[in-house]
Length: 113
Image: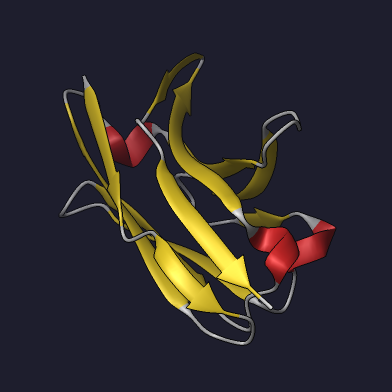
């Protein structure tokens, strides 16, 4: 099983980034896919998730700014991040969950003011 996240980088506040996570080794369409982030000194927190039925859920802090989507044909999940804020800084991880969870390696997002 592999979850390969990419798309992180450094942007100024108000900018946008699009994260991608490609997966292999799982029945992607059956998994709940999620994006989590961990800021320095903080615990990992859920940012957004999308079910196999395409229902979505977002952390309050990102509602209206982030959009999660999935492409089952490509076994990939995406996170479009708009109007980024310095508090969005952290390492972003993708997660696949179908009872058992798998994590990607993380991609760093840095937002400067």
